[in-house]
Image 1 (cartoon, rainbow, N blue to C red):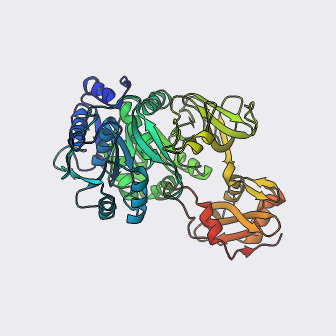
Image 2: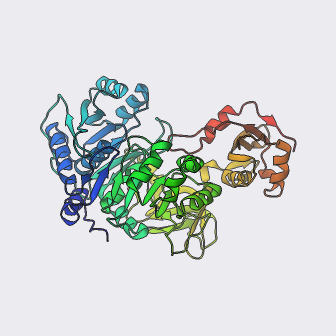
Image 3: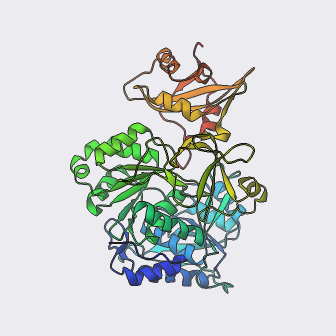
Length: 516
């Protein structure tokens, strides 16, 4: 089996798939009939016709405050094909939602019938139309209708073009300081075409969705890209360990993509499901949204018997690099090779560097975003001479494999000595009593900053601080060794699962001093 042709827009691609692979299952869910690629265009047309009837068309922003599941998946694809979809976490407070809505000024907010009261109040307070998504659970997965009391003339009805914005994604950060990224249809198409080659998608593939659909990783890498490639997706309403293994047995997916916290939880629970693990149908596991502990990689590969593929992605470029599948060379510790376009290393003067030189990772190509929404200053700083400046530090080896060494903004400045938190964390994680570790800047009266560290111990252990210091002495220069430690039950993390170092600095007001 092969992947069907990917056309130039979302609509033309799925309309083509309906003819080329009509009987292939597109959207699946527990205890529901699957939605076939043959029927997906009809569901998309229902979304388009409903939105056009509400006065919403090409270029208009529609916010989705929706739970997980097959209806949200189809709604996302349908809206993205004829307008612009911006998802928000249903767990946000009314105040947070109000700030988002005020900033992006959408035409409407879609909510599940009878749910999302905070979103309804936020929309009503700003005079924004509310649309109810009413799931039809007696029909195949992803079947629903959209209802609203409002109607208006639509200025730009029909399907979007390759130049139209399909999705909006918010960067990491607080509600007030995040940036909003328009993802055009052509960006999504370019990404899907690159993924077909890199991951060897065929119509026999089936993905198991784990990441939430208000997260860029979930929206693009785990949903729209494989659908555009002609592969089906299982869309459970939520991620739970028990149902993950049940779905692994029931649907027999060939891959899944997740963040490091999900992978760790899956590995921890795998021993409770030996038969399911032994009989799994996976051909690879994909990891994103942050660096995965090498011990978890080894554990997953040993447990499931398939490669774990790490890559680099971000809101501005959802998939920059990724390790290739066997039999191609996979290099542990790297995030692989470029999927599309160019990835280079640049110094502070804007000069490109050769192999094995450390500098800022820069990217250009057809998947790269074209600017932040209504933020010309941030756009000018990020896009320079055609290159997107990622803010990540890294180096390329002689074969083009990329290694990430840290974030420029996360460097700890200890009296002029620049320290990468990731380097400290890697060293700490090698200690047998440390399950998780995070390094962060801690204020110092004369040096400006010193290295602080928070650790989550392995269950049943109590790491000795002096032992940790001795352990690190063989792995780090003296100025890189943390002088302040704290032991936590869990590390503070943002909605994407990344460590919140700012929160660690804030909470670390009464550190336990460790002798130098």
